[in-house]
Amino acid sequence: MRSDYSPRPGSLAARVCAWFKSNPEGRLTREQIRQQFGAETPINFAGQLGAAEDADLLASELVEGRFVYQAGPRLDKWAPAMEDTAPPSVAWKPAAAAPAASAQRPPKRPPKRVTVCDADELVIEDDIPMPGASRPLEVERMQAKIASMRVGQSFQRPHDEAQALIRRADNWSRRHRDGKVKFALRRIDDKHSRVWRTE
Image (cartoon, rainbow, N blue to C red; front, top):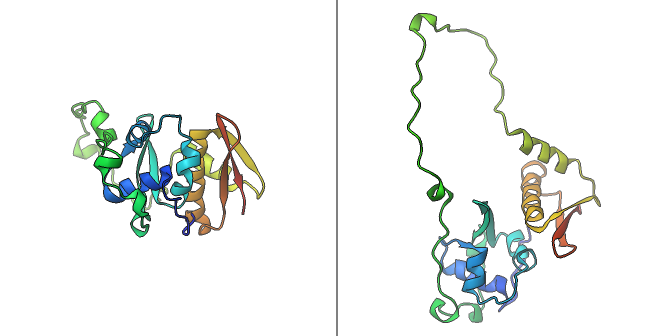
């Protein structure tokens, strides 16, 4: 995370950050960002918004197969330039918030009735050790893989997947290494990015 980063005034990152500064509860999909900010050509989201995400000015998550952006935890400490604070009716129109994942789920099924045993069949036992809380196997395997990287080692994945993995790597570093293990992402072609361990 870079605490000194500020997007260049007039850039897409600055305008998106300014929008979320005025709409802190808002959420925008990538398609809504294209429409909101008049982007007529394809947007390299990793290149144009990635640094703002790294600095925690923006945050994104994958919801129902699409990336949804929102204000990051440090956005309240950032001050937009005057040119990025034009009224939304002039520079862009506020988009409707992206539907929450829960709103897109099918209705819940009624709870299944379960027949329990008779009281006489319930055996109460002493001195049985309780195992630790389990985590999904794939998350554990991914963390172990990231933890095994040495400085200079890297991996290549499609852009969106690489962005998600570097966020996971940074989160792992903050939780287990006080943020001292550093990773960097670079686009290497039209479809792929590469993540390096740098420290």
